Amino acid sequence: MSFEEHVPHKSQIGGVRRFHTGQILGLSISHFIHDIYSSFLSPLLPLLIEKLSMSLTQAGFLSTIMQIPALLNPYIGVLADRISVRFFIILAPAMTAVPMSLIGIAPSYAVLLILLFITGISVSIFHVPSPVMIARLSGPKKGRGMSFYMTGGELARTVGPLVAVGAVSVFGLEGFYPIMIFGLMASVWLYFTFRDVSVAADQHRRLSVMESWREMRYILLPLTAILLARGFMHGAMATFLPTFVKLETGNLWLAGIALTVYEATGVAGVLVAGSMSDRFGRRRILLISMLGAPVSLFLFTLTGGWIRFLTLLLIGFTLLSTTPVMLALVQEHAKKSPAAANGLFMMVSFMARSAVVVIVGFIADLIGLRATYILSAFMGLLGMPFIFKLPRK
Image 1 (cartoon, one colour):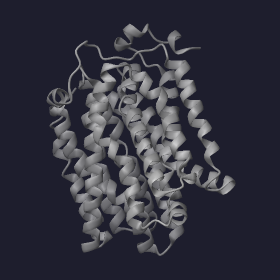
Image 2 (image 1 turned 90 degrees about the vertical axis):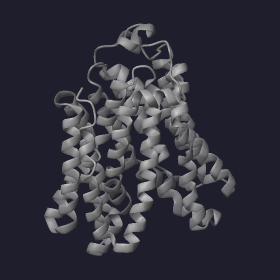
Image 3 (image 1 turned 90 degrees about the horizontal axis):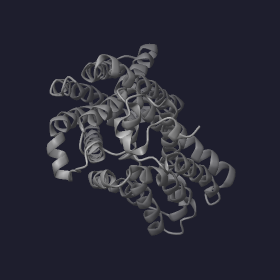
Image 4 (image 1 turned 30 degrees about the vertical axis):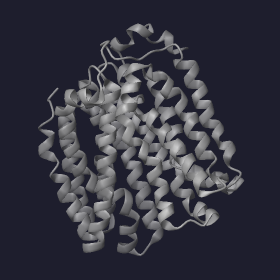
C-alpha cells in the first residue's frame, strides 16, 4: 500500500490530523540506516591512522570536518522550507552511504577529508527536514513520532560500530565499500514512497534565519540553557564513561559493557519519552528527565557494584530521553518555517555539545574524572529552572 493511500493529497498534508504509523516507521528505519553509515568513522579510525600515517591531531580533525556543515543547519532549514523537503530526505541515505563506504580506499588524507565533508553535508540535509516530515505525519502526537524517529538514530549509534568492524573483518578496509548498497536501497525506497508527497508549512510566507530566530527565541533560549546544562552530563557519559569505568575497576571489558548498557537504555528512554510527553506534557517529562539524570549520576559516581549498575540504567534512560521531547516542542511552535526552526535547534545543540565536551575534558585534566562527574551532575540540576520558561502547551 502506497503512502498516497494513507495520507491526503500533497496540498493538504500540512493539515494531517492523525498518526501515520507506517510512514513514520519507514522514515525511522531510514534514519537508522542513514546513521549507521555516519557512525563508521570512530571504529575505523585506528585503521585509517595506520594506513595514512596520520598524527592524532590530523585524526581528531576528521571528526571536526564532518561536523562543520552543522553550522549551516539554519540555512539548510530555510532552503528546505522553500522547496519540498522530500528531496533532501530521499537523497541523504545514498549521499551518506557512498562516501562513508569509500573511506577505506581513500588514497590520501585530503581525499579522506573531502569524503567526510560530503558526509557532513548529507547528515545535515537529512536531519534538518526529516523531523519536520515526522511532525507533519504525527498529527497531534508529535512526541510519539519523534520518539520513533530518534529511536532509529540511537539504535544506529549502538549497531553502527559493530557493522563497520564486521564489514572490515570480512572484506578488509579497502574492500568493504559494497556495503553502500543498503543506503542506496533506502534512497530508492524513499523515492518511490515520497516522490509525489509534499510536506510543507501551513503558511505561504517563509521566514529568513533571523526572522525564524525572532519567532522561536522564546523556545530556543530556554532550550539552549537546558542543552548546555545537559551537555556536561552527556559529555561526561558519552565521551568518558569507558575511561571512568576502566579507572574505577581496571577492567576494560566492563568499560565497554558500560557504554553499551548506557546506549541501550537510552534507546528505551527515547522510545518512551515522546509518547509520555504527548500525554503528560512536554515540561513535566523534561523535569523528570532533568532531575532523574543528575541524581542518578551522583549515585553512579559515589557508589559501586549493583547499585552503580542500576544507576547507569537510570542515567541512560533519563539523560538521552530529552531529545524527542525538545524536537516535538520546536515543531509545535514553529508555524511559519518549521525546517528553519529545526535547523536553528540542531545548530544550537551541536555547538553546545561540542563546546561542553572540550570543557569537560579540560576540567577532568585538572580535578580528575570522579570529581568531574560530580560537577557535571550539579551542572545538570542548573538546567531545571529554565524548563519553567518553556510554554505549558
